[in-house]
Image (cartoon, rainbow, N blue to C red; front, side, top):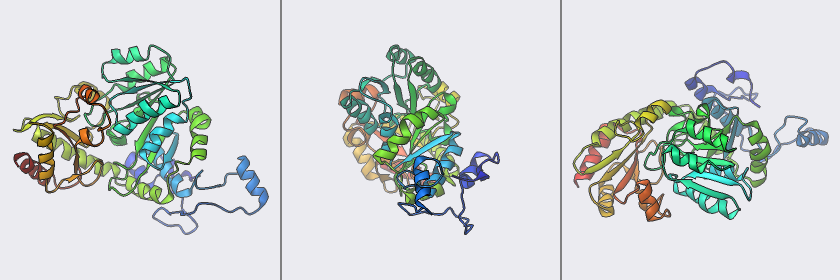
Length: 397
């Protein structure tokens, strides 16, 4: 329901500031916040036409809201997608993207290298609904080819993965998925929409926890599902969202819309700081291993150079020792917070084995390289020299 202000051929940063704006009769500069659950009609006949789809009119904020529409329009422009469906949280986006189209008897192929809650949706919830799920723990395309040698309905992956930054070849897996009859869904949270464009690489659907970098300041929950697949949206997603209600609130949509204005600036600065910190830690005494998409030592460095335009903001590293050693390091930090969130302006560390991936079995964690001495660092917007000093003193503590 937005006007043509978005169709001027603007570049990304301009769209992040001005895309999707629909001003009211008051001509406000800042996007308006429409905190309303319902809407009125001039006549009963107008209400009838609106519900029949014969007249364009907001019906109910579970179906649509002007503030939410502005956020979705801006997300579409950023991603280069025709359709954006926002949700109340990132996990709402994950579940909706799969549950809206999968039914009993269908087949899902999913990466095993997923955020713990995403793995739960794929390997626990979907099978409860009669969906066969096969997971692939490898980056080897031969393993994906074997998993997709049988017909499938959906493929779900995240790349780079949480927390070990396993990178998967989106273009190659998309081709395999389509030959198997499946739609490919990519969780693009770690790469961010600034550094990776899954739809351009052949993915059918891309999703975000907008709670992370898109908000970027730890204030709101949100999610988004973007696609150019009109049939997917009209036949599956649209009515699923309407009738199950994982709806983004107008207030959160407003916060996220304003956050998009600085997304590219924030993520660029955070990624530069993360690269500095990864280099600072690589080979440092007390650090066994550093995993970062910007390091030449990354196992998929060649693929990263082809597929991503930047390294992201997350650094994973293993310390010399065990879980107790990792805990001592984290407890000794004076500036960096202990938190399981990421993408925030404030830097934070987490211990995936005991938090985000604690429900994943020990054998599966070992297979994915998630060890008890491993720490995940989300780099924020503090002065990078202060961050390095805090890390150095905590390693030595």
